[in-house]
Length: 193
Image (cartoon, rainbow, N blue to C red; front, top):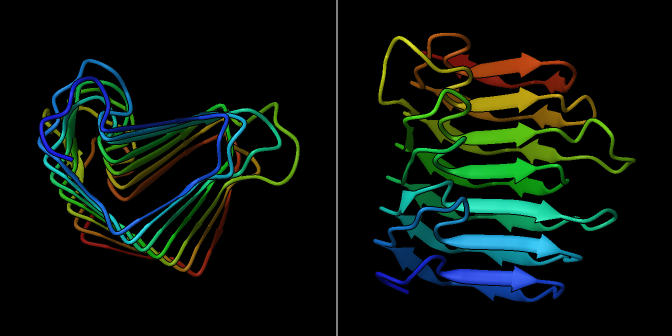
């Protein structure tokens, strides 16, 4: 999918498996420039390349409980955003984010360059899992601002961040990882941030 309108793929109240796709060069004014997953959905997005999209977060997940979509083995690279994260935004929802390469995503906002998990505070178990990802070289257009250039956890006490390599990300506070209320961090490697 190239140069689509508001969103490359919009998934609502369905649980497809999306695999082997390329979504690139989309310009949008909304979060979910490449992919939006909303409503009740346990969608799986895997082995896709999501690159060079501009506007909001490349992927936005804002599903209803007990939905738990999965992002696996994707390349999410070179996306830019003026809202929240440039790579992945999970907003008031839970998700599994595993074995992805999330690289060189740049946000002009001040929250999360690569991944932002925002406000799963009131949600019940299960919560978001961020496991075995490479999160590298993400950040912000303004080097004097930004929380969580690699990963931002905001009001996400149930989120588990485990086994990730978080490298070369930039941000004013928490270049690699920023936690605002909660989260469990296990065996991550954070370098050059």
